[in-house]
Length: 379
Image 1 (cartoon, rainbow, N blue to C red):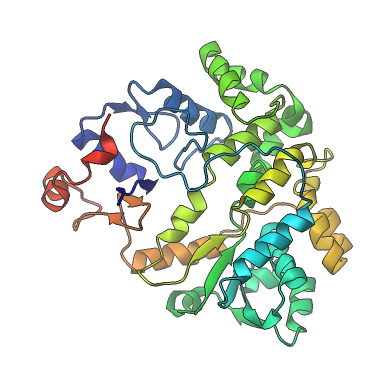
Image 2: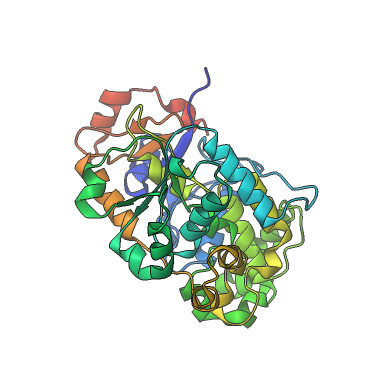
């Protein structure tokens, strides 16, 4: 059996683990430290800083071409699509059929936003047994998309469950859990703050201009020229570069966070959009990620898909990406109550932690793990 690799790290503790393994590191502009002698890996951290004023989260490389200072788990290696043979509707249908084959109750987290609404619509259009579905919503979901809430409430076979606050913390439901995760990453994760800073024209400008202006480092720009070629397509604009970075380097962050709430034998938490067919659809349709200078045109592909079902013209024309944190707050509270603080999460679900977190000591770490994790750091 192969040793598990690292799925997710907690920077504040992980830096100490690097010290214990005598791996030299130094501060970056984000919460992720630079690792000495790993220039290309450090450049990935720099890209993270170009695209965010508050960069955080692990950086991976799904092309598996960048030397890493430790063994990171890559759930879905990057595959360059050979042909544009699936429409959005076809890819969504395939995903629903795949998830329905679990033959379990399908719990869908619905925030009312674009991503989770597209997931709900996909199941309503393609699931052969509507009674298999359970919509988990909150009062915020009702406010964000009241028209669809009324429509969902009128479907007799569809189970609806209000899932806020203590209900979330104390409820253990059967089946699998589906979120709208990975849609952000695969659609360039274009948050409003970045759009407001750079605007439509800035998103369409050559990416080299932004990267050099941010770093004043021509070697960094040259690295990115080579790295972007690994996408298998031309990367010319800031928006295309952003799509490639989040698609390749950031896509695992939400599944990793979801895994923190799972105990052995509990149901799966699955990001609906984290699959190759949707990713390949976006590969061929990145030009339509932001179709007009109005930010409300971001994610128009998914909004059109929703509109074909609900005919809600107001939602289609005016709905913008909103970073909802309602479920994240419930999840973080549950993590705290379950005492799930960890230095890192391994790909087999093991949480590397010590009894006295957050006051980690080298003695405590060595007492518990001795040298059993050295294989992760054979630098």
